[in-house]
Length: 567
Image (cartoon, rainbow, N blue to C red; front, side, top):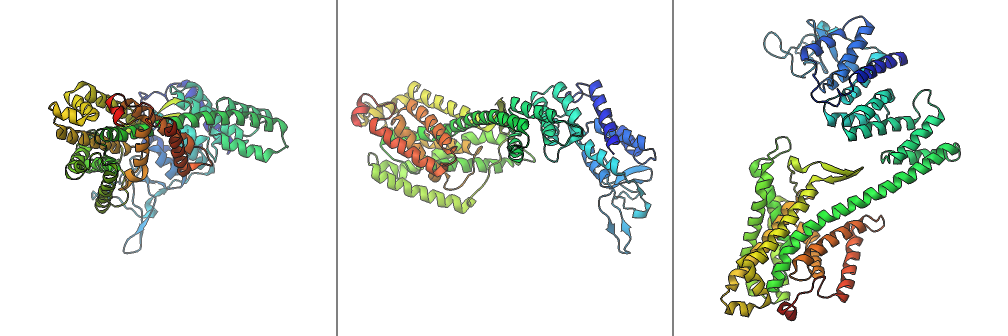
């Protein structure tokens, strides 16, 4: 058996050496279906060498459809019928208790049709048995991995390279992994192939492997900073104790290097997650900063406006019939203006019916908007239930590898870009439009602005609707990275959003940006501490903010001029 596997590996590796870019080049010509079926037919022959050669030819084809065929061949589900290779995984009985075999095509998996145009179901006794021996079953199992390693699809090759290094280890793929680690055009695949090769060597399962080779594998795993090796090295070090001093010393050195790398990766990842969380907080706090600075209204329903934006995104998904199996990615682009407009209209209605009667009355506005928020939560719960999921568009899935093991999800990158766009839009609106001039004038002195002809009621309606729309955009963005529940805004965001406004300075755009990003990053860094967790992180953050406002009660960027006098 070992000789057969060695032959198979030698042939596969030899072919890889002669075709160094075949696995990495998607333009490599694949064998035709007819050629593959011809190789399959050889498996029914009596010549063992031809059967092994046929398995090699199938494995080197890189056709992913053959993975299922090789598994069926290994389990004895491949037969010969009317001089063609067919597959039958399960049998069935007719009314006379005859055992019938429903046949499927070995490549496509589609039913094989009989003379009547229906799926062929011959008697089991009419099938020619193709029973692989033990060596051939082993070769077929290895062939499935080689199909992945030699696939023209980079994702399939990466998956195959990783799988070979996971328990149970595919020790027969060591040489091929080495070739891929040197010749593949994709850096990630080369790294993963090398990592898997070293993990196999670390396992100690290779025949005729000496202690020095295993120690060298341990050292190299440390050099490439393999996070996959971390638990295995820790387990190996616990098993060794003082039995092998040299190997234990090498494990200790590699573990120190990998753990330091893991801390760096975790730090970068937490900062990035904090920036994306801060971006959502900024979107939430922008509206709060404007409305509180202009009207003196503490809008406790601001979180529910965020929830409305999230559910509007969900409704747009349903409208476009977007599902992962049949994606309609354009739905998410249309959901952005929809979330803004729906939340803005709800905000305008709130302002007209309730809020406009409570200007400069913070306590009454707090209680009234809190009650409105409870009503909106119950309406959403009746309509949607307790929890729904929004399927992200295809372009928001996956991640960008900024450095080794540091992956930046596309969804979070999009949220940060959306936040930047929103900040620029608010800045332009406030500083370069007539409405922005009226808003700033009304914030500084409502009576003076009214005496100069500014329609302050119109300014109030627009400002409240604009702030509500920004909260809707925050909910729209959150659907990419979090769940959607009726109380999502009240539970997770409203308190943090007010903290952002207080720390940054009421009505100060730059203060909102700095405090939002700071609170987001600080939250994620504190949550990452094992003995603190999410709840205590919020408590500690609140304590820090309370201490901060004792020294800077006006926030990072204190209001100036008449606005400062009013505070």
